[in-house]
Image (cartoon, rainbow, N blue to C red):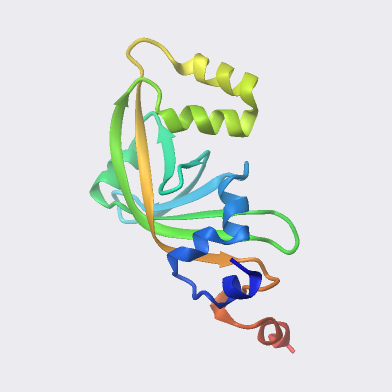
Length: 168
């Protein structure tokens, strides 16, 4: 997809997952910031390692309050972004599919290898892989996608010139 074609896609279009910015972030070692609504109705955000399998963002955990909250209210928003200037951000919305897995979630091991390297990733997995280990696989199939790169794509769908005129 050409850069011009990428810039023409509206925010929300799932084809944004195919853009250079999205692909770079989906295969990066940036943390995903995951937002959900807790049992008490208040919003929560937590950072997590993630794995993109080509169709879903998969988050893995060992349970807890966020799992119960996601089962009750599966709506979720995920941001994967850079701390550079200009920043790049991938915004995803969807519903979480929560599944208990006996043993280690396959995507957890893949994420550990991507973030920490083969050797350290294997050591990280081995440290938690014990008889009786149960993990939770949280799979999010994107239903809405946004991309911001502050070069060709800006908040609110403005053009680079419109964005530059803000505040003048």
